[in-house]
Image (cartoon, rainbow, N blue to C red):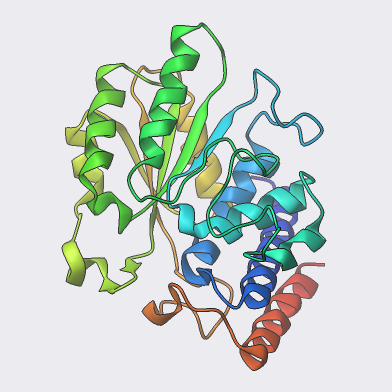
Length: 279
């Protein structure tokens, strides 16, 4: 990836992270840690990869995206807002009565959301169905999804994985946001799904392991996924939970807690400094 493109994506990701903090703080609730960890993946997909059009959110041949870890909705909302699906100012209405931006993605009310998610393990099944539909009807769209590493402790994930490989869904890419933390502690303490790469390989998937906070590695992995084989691809993306906000990074307590006013100011100051350093 050329340095100019990388810098541009880093700026956007920084703005996405600011949107995450803005929304969660305004709501006084939400999930900042796992939203911040996957911000780079979402930024790359929406700003440099997927075939989408904010002016026509439901265009037939668009690529589909499913946020299987639906509690990371603040990250998806901030990305969609930056991409122009709705005003960035709307992020401050997160979880407010009457707002379209509730705690989990809602495909009926939010422009750019392809699937309502939140019940862990179910999003990937919807993504598999979309990929199968594309293949069955001879469409040319691809389907992308992001799962949490805690989420893949759910059995339904592996039923979907088995089905996707059996149906040769080479148009499906699943990112696993491997930040190693979930609501009750580390994934190793709770119910380790590791080795994640070998599990997906055993289920018949093409597997690529990357640093999920590195745009060059995200780009290379997606290029590899598009080489035309008939296997679905799992991109195992090691990330930092709370990425970009120093006091949230790798701290399990920031899974589902909103920053108070003082913490909000610190987080926004850090992110603004990062953005300024990129200019």
